[in-house]
Image (cartoon, rainbow, N blue to C red; front, side, top):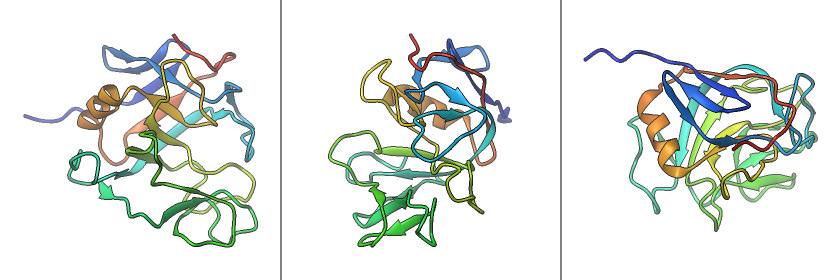
Length: 174
């Protein structure tokens, strides 16, 4: 069977892939064409999937190209860090986010190429696709889904799958 590559289009009505629409949440401040670090907005435009990280202690490897997170993995969101908007290791002297969390939000992380691999400092770090806290709960700029929907999306994508974020005036989606 040949796999048909489909894009994931994030609209105000949800994320559409083919004939399926997945409910999702975006940044608290909707979308923007002028993304900045800490603005709590999701960048509009076309992005690509460039990787998948997962919690091997919580779920089985979701796709063959997924990489297991280690307890020391962090993502830098500090513009003073030479490794800004990069995967790094703890401890770090710079502001960062630990990727191993007590909640399930980062049990699966789909990495996008937003401001990566050559980041512009201050343009915003790490737009992930990850699990949501609850339906409709906004993110800090990422795109969040129900765990089962995220696993279904993972079955239908590969490296280079396009994530197209259309303008949203309101962050919460039904």
